[in-house]
Image (tube, helix red, strand yellow):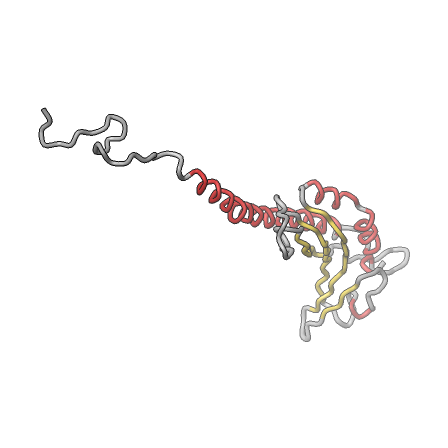
Length: 199
């Protein structure tokens, strides 16, 4: 005898006589589409946005350490020659993975320490005028070696098929990285009597 309750189905626990419906599998199609949107629209861009700054920071550290070594050179011409012929810097950048050095340049920046605080930039040897040398009319001055590198940083995953190219997402990101270090050799060549920084 059935007391006040409806008889129930042993499978679905639904009242007898009601329509049965499946409770599993009907969200599979929606889940697959949502997963694709999640990966392509959110996960990959976030991963790329995380990898690009990391590669940029590592490249900055390598260039800063190299310019500190170059600032200890005997003269400015050997500094420029070392940067042009040094494959170690390019090798270190390339070994990071996803970083490709395109060009490098080295200049000597001379800044006055007193008013009017003018600046002179020497981009080749023997181009510093006497007034900008130590003991010149513009002295005291601060001498700083600056190395500029143009690098191409690639994202971890390149997305294809977008109408407009997006740097860092659909194509590599090109940026300029600079490193500076204090020029250390203020001496004169005992043979030529010229300052090493202007040779």
